[in-house]
Length: 79
Image (cartoon, rainbow, N blue to C red):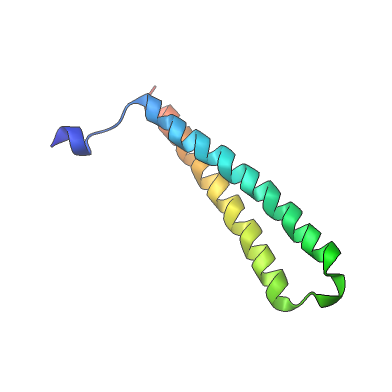
């Protein structure tokens, strides 16, 4: 039972590190995409576009922060 539910080693902290890099890149791409959408469709921007763009940026930033926090917690707990 301990093999399936026990704590994992320090090498598994890399998982959160990789996810934080992935979501940081996704965050940057979301910002570029939303700004590009504003520039390209300047006359057709509606409230739904703005809400979706802000939600996309917020969600990717939150995912980046959570995975960075989990990576920090993982590293500090295995020292």
